[in-house]
Image 1 (spheres, rainbow, N blue to C red):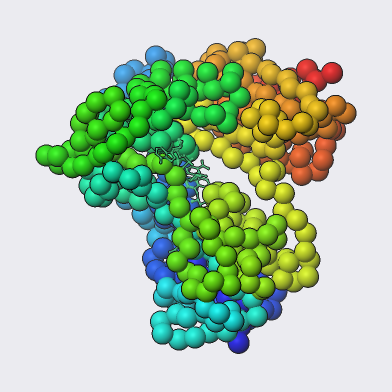
Image 2: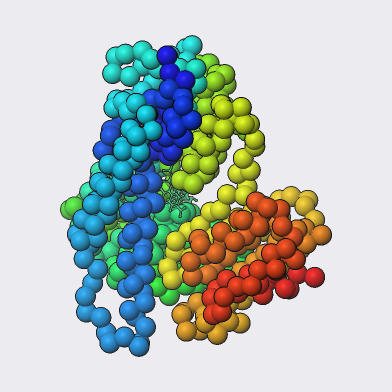
Length: 440
Ligand SMILES: Cc1cc2nc3c(=O)[nH]c(=O)nc-3n(C[C@H](O)[C@H](O)[C@H](O)COP(=O)(O)OP(=O)(O)OC[C@H]3O[C@@H](n4cnc5c(N)ncnc54)[C@H](O)[C@@H]3O)c2cc1C
Ligand SMILES: NC(=O)c1ccc[n+]([C@@H]2O[C@H](COP(=O)([O-])OP(=O)(O)OC[C@H]3O[C@@H](n4cnc5c(N)ncnc54)[C@H](O)[C@@H]3O)[C@@H](O)[C@H]2O)c1
């Protein structure tokens, strides 16, 4: 009998290590030990950010201060580098688990009635179970995914040669990041999306700038376009849209990810699109929790990690609510990144929260003009008493800068509290000082 069985070795591993260090008897079941660390490590955050950081260098080398660069990013080297890092990380995670006393079990786990876990034909029992089985790419009807000409993020981060051209379907996180990557590396890149704009969640001023920046990078927008059918034709992707027929070397399908729920083999755990959970991530079966992508709340690695740590605290009688609104989100687009935390204009427009909004354009900072960031900006939201409610940023390294506002939210700061900080010059963090000073 275990105290806790964790099913799925993505961000769940962090919870397993902490619970074992606290003296609990813990097992972690992962269907493929060469995939320990989950999507984030193997085919998500880490490989995509490695590629994007390299592509950012390509963007910087276009600055006229450099003599023309002749070398193009060598994709096979980038893939080899990331594979080596991933391999080391697998061994590091296993070592952390083993030294903490976590029992690692390789095999596909299933949960049945009475919390029984079946793996490799054996039935295991635990007082608590934490499901963290992740998600998989969602492919819309009519698209014949074949892993060669029609691919998803599972394949795109393992390409060893650049295609001449690529179409990317979907303008969410993966679509925008991968379009930035390919365009920055000189691949003819077409972004196909169903609506007028790439997003309906970004502040309109920042959205206009972001769309301009992406188009300046060379991304062609095919808006208001739906793919009705996509099939392979002469090793290329033949696409039929509401606008006509097109052909590309590759079609990357980036239309969202569906939670992996086949772990559940009992109707005592309610599953709709995702495994349903309450605010403490407990499923409808008492003592069984679901964290990360499989519960459908927020598909982010740091959210999954925060959820599993929260579940371990709940199990250890330190129950507290995790505020998912205060978890930062970002898109690593090029050349500027977008990040948001707390409320945004879209969420405020749908609520009756009384608030103030201030905007500061990066063009007001000399540094921006030297770094190609003058089209960026920051938006800050406060309540009527000047307490910080959230922010949206379009800046270089917005994913880092947003940490300042995230910390201010966690500590429930008002603008004067945050204004006690002096930010270094010349940096983009000064834009936060300037926007805070605009709040009256
Ligand atoms: C291209 C891409 C880029 C991304 N970039 C970022 C980013 O920059 N920042 C960010 O925060 N998020 C990013 N994400 C999202 C992030 O990867 C996920 O939110 C995160 O990995 C979810 O963690 P998880 O533990 O819930 O699931 P996963 O990481 O998917 O882990 C689930 C694990 O469970 C295993 N498993 C599944 N079913 C079973 C079973 N029945 N039995 C045993 N094992 C099982 C799987 O093999 C897998 O290892 C990205 C995703 C993609 C695809
Ligand atoms: N920087 C990051 O944190 C990061 C990076 C990459 C991925 N991720 C995570 O991975 C998850 C998956 O990324 P994603 O880009 O696939 O999903 P997404 O939800 O971010 O975007 C999906 C896109 O596909 C479109 N779409 C949805 N259904 C469609 C359909 N049936 N037909 C046509 N278009 C459709 C949506 O309008 C949207 O443009 C995201 O939820 C995100 O949280 C995060």
